[in-house]
Image (cartoon, rainbow, N blue to C red; front, side):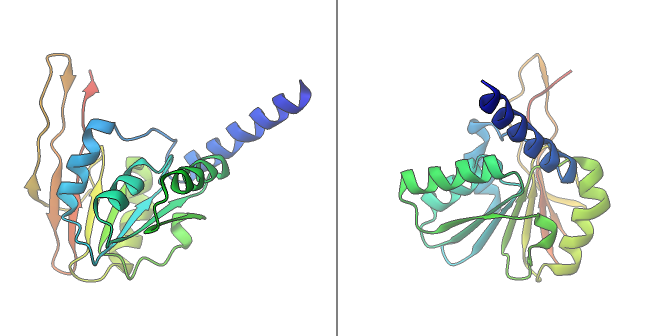
Length: 190
């Protein structure tokens, strides 16, 4: 019983550590993943990064749908990273790689598409600066649920609105140096 408790405690400790760094693990809704990939305009020859990939669902979907693309999921929490690795093996998907590391230590200069689902404070304080510094011209960034301050939307995609949900519009952003996409959110209950 003590071993089970210790393992559970470690699991939640690692998740908390990852959440403190970028965001707590909250998976993207399955119904939105297809739209995320469509907005990314990912091509088979491109490189797609999922920063803070959680359970890997977005990275795995992108890898399945675009077998010529190179997909990389970055995850800091060992339990989630291990789950991603197992899902990759179970699905026999060769064009996806999961790395156990901080997204802030990954060189993103070769990225064509970046997908993030992070907290607004972290995006504003750290991620935006990293992306502006490292991404090559023409790279696209999709941020699920939260706007990236200072980036002007250039494309919008709006999910259906239910009477009990407030929906923030997803956007795509263009900057002079880098083309960015900013998906602002889906289905927040008010």
